[in-house]
Length: 571
Image (tube, rainbow, N blue to C red):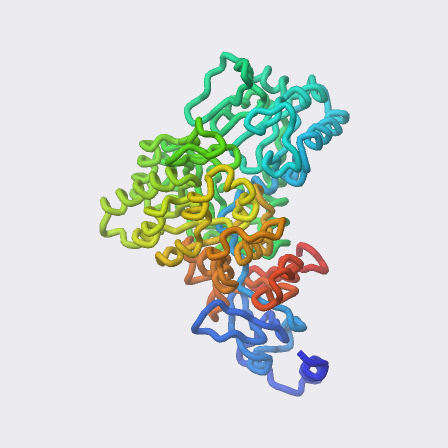
C-alpha cells in the first residue's frame, strides 16, 4: 500500500467520524457493532470474496467487502478498528489439545526447553531448596531425543535416577515426558509407590530397567500409573485456576475454538459453570475420556450441543490404542530400527475400544482414537470399518484418528474411502523428525510418516493442532511447520508432503469446524456465521516463508467481542 493510499484511507475515515459527530448522515438501517477495515480479510469461503473490511453485529458476521462497502454498516455506536493493512482470518481452531494440561503445565516445572539431563536435575535441585519436606516435585516437557548430549549412564538413551535422587532424597519427584507417554521418577517416588525390581510390567506399559533388572526411574505408557501413590495427597492446583490459565493462553495465541482431546465429566461441569459466569472466552469442543462403564451409565446425559451461545459442545469420546514414538511406545507393524526387541505398546485392548465404538454409535457420539504407529492406525481403521459396515444408514459419522502419524501405505487410502478424519499436528513433524529416521528407518519414514498430501489425495479431511502442552499451542508455529517442514538445521523433512499455505489455513479453520460438525457456524468468514476472527500482524499467505514465525496475534475476536489484543492483553 502506498503512502498516498494510507493517507487517503485515513482521511476518509476521519471524514466519516466527523460526519457521525455532526449528525450529517442518516443512521444505517443495519448498524454493525464492530467493523474492521483497511486490511486484508481472507474468508476461506470460495463463495465469499476476500475483502478489505468486515462488519459484525452481535455474535455474527454481517458482511465482508471493500472499505466502501462496509462503510454502509457504520453507525454512531459502531466500534471501528483500522487494520492498517493487517490480516484478518477466521479464528484459529485448535483441533487437538489438552486444555487443562495447558493450565496445569503452568503450575509445574517447564522442561520443554532444557538442553540436557543435567539441566533437568539442576532445576529440580533449585525447587527442592524451597520445598517443604516430602512435598511432591512435578514437571513436564523433557525429551531425551532433543537434548544436546546423551546422559551417562543411560538405558536406551534414558538417564538413570541416581543424580536426580541425590538432589532430592526426601522429596518425591515425577517428571512427565513431553509427549505425556512416559514419566521419570526419583528413588523416593518409587519407594513411596512400592516399586522394586520385582514389580511386574503392567499390560500396555513398561518399567525401564538396567542390566541388573533394577528400575532406572523411567516408566513407559501405562506403567506411569504405578507412580500414583507418590502423587497421592499432593496439593493439586485449583481446577478453576487451571482453566483460567489455559483460557488466557489460547486466546492470546489467536485460538477462538479449542477441541479438547479428553476430559472427564467433572471438567465438563466446571466448563459449564465458567461459561455461565462469563469467565471462559474460548469456545470448547470436548471429547469425553472415561471408562466404558462410566460411558454406558452417563453418556446420554452429556451429549451437549452449542451450550452457552455455542461455547460448549460435547459429542465425542476419546480412546488411546498406543503410545508415542519418542518413548518407543507407538505400536508398529515391524520392530523399531533402534530398538529391535520392541514393536511398541498396545495401551488399550482391542476389545475395549470395540466396546467404546458400540457405545458411540448407540448414543450418536463421534469416536476419536489416538493412534500413532502403523499397527495402531491399522487396528483403529479396522474397528471403524466394522462399525460403519454394521450401521450402513449412518452415512456421516466423521470418526477421527488423532495423530495418524505413521501409516502403512496400504492403509492411507482407507482414510478417504471410509471418511475417517485425520487429526494431525503439523508441529509434531518438525519436532519429531530428527529421531523419526532412527526409530523407523528411511523406507518407513518416506512411505508413511506425516504423509499429509497422500492423505488429502484420498479426499480425507485433515485438521491441524499442537497437542498442547506437548508442544506450544501457538498456531503460527504449527502453520509454519505445516507449510515448511523445515527443521532447526535447515533441512526439510520430505518436502513433497508439505501443505500449501491455503491448505494449511484450511486445516486450521474450516477443516477443524467440519471435524466437529460445526462447519455451518464457524471456520469461514461467511455472513451469518459466528463472528470469530483472528487478526495477524503479517499476511502469512504471502510473506516470505522464513518471516512467518515472527507473525504476531494482534486481536482475537470471539462472537464479535474482542477478547484479546496485543496492546491490552486479555479483555
